[in-house]
Image (cartoon, rainbow, N blue to C red; front, side, top):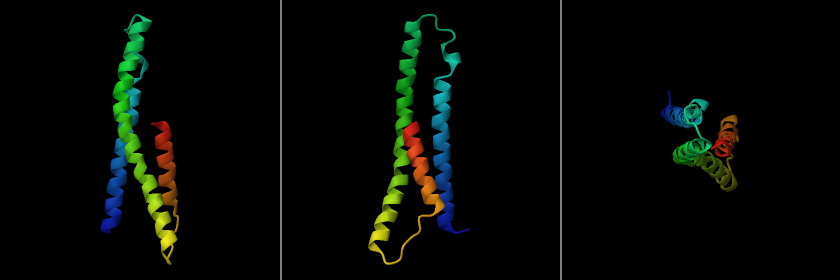
Length: 107
């Protein structure tokens, strides 16, 4: 296997794990079971605000790691503008940009 492809695969796998961790954290922080034992609305609101602060810290990592998708697109655009040989906009580049947009919207 080519080193470049292996490196790309490992980086993509790490990003998938990171995004899955962020999604799991959201589900864990905001599940209904967290509020069952809280008796007053004020306690529930306080718990939600506390969990939002925790999630915002995790969330910022997801947004930060979505930005390289756009950097990759920008590099491809700049290369194609400056080079005689054009690199194609393959399905993986399009999938990365769609994933980046989706992640930023979700996070």
